[in-house]
Image (tube, rainbow, N blue to C red):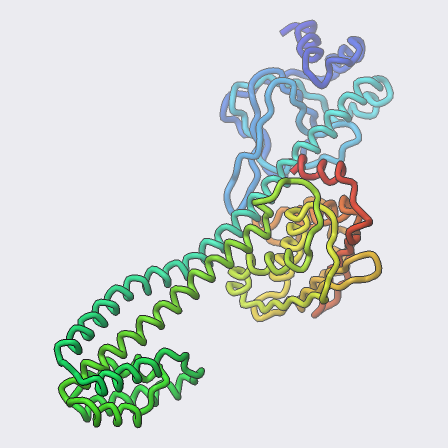
Length: 476
């Protein structure tokens, strides 16, 4: 490739289109062309990056290590500039650079950067603008990846949370058919027994007693009652399988003695079978109601957390409800980590103005981090109070605290103290940006045994600028 061809190719690259030709010629005279076949490992993660690389043909892909594996994060085609750029602090490759199509690249060693800055101001400006665009693209990609990981973790936890009550409801629904069949058969048997009105009244009285919810009993009390009822049934030569539901009701052994004295002995078993089936069916119905109610509450919490049924416009946001919904969404993680969380919100807490789903993302990131920091057996405390024209939310944990050397960088993008693959370092950066765009502020204090993040948001009336917050949602 001739020198003119190199100059023309460089000049046709989108980032350099407005650069005067003489500055492109300066660049071409000091760099060199290299070719790389498909499949070449151009740079390993962590390798020094000493040369600016302009792709003139082919494609270069980069891979980052995530959760123990290498994931393709992006690719650079013709006109893309990789590696260090004047004024950048880029020294090491953050991931693997792999040639995916045969590549022709123009490379300039960073030792030329001082002269480039002095002799080629337009070229320098174009490169810096490209560096800013590149940084913005990478940051947006990382934010989206972090958000997807967060959604994935929440979805996994919710799937587990929903599976338990759904399985319970299905299991109880299947047993309900058997119980209803048993009750019908017992009822037919009673009809065939042709009991007198007084005897039927005695049987109905037993069933009415069982319709009232019994008092709460300890496991030991329940076991003792079941043994007593089982012995009573055995003494009367009756099936002891009815002992468990009868013992769980309000019945007493004295009531059973009266029943046995008022109706024929061969009918007592039918009456108790009819009563026990009814008790068990009502208990199963209550369990189904409880399980489906749990599912309803979880779905409502997800809807409240995501604002999925609302338009993406700013509105008055109930912070207390958002904190509650966020905690319910994170219940699975709390149990997995064996962490106890407590929420206290002031009565009549004022509302704040903004995007509810974004504000809830602040709570999700802070509480999620607090759970990780607290560790197994730890505690997380969330409070929300009103202070003047603002609401102050505090998320505290009793973990080891943030080391002194890390405190100045806690809100920096991509900074994380979590192991590789477990954190992107964008959660607290996102918290800070969302809070600031809602005209609030966030800070923290930390010492061993107590770390507190404080978020202050103005109440409705001191309203955030909708355009600024909308810009955040468009970026994300």
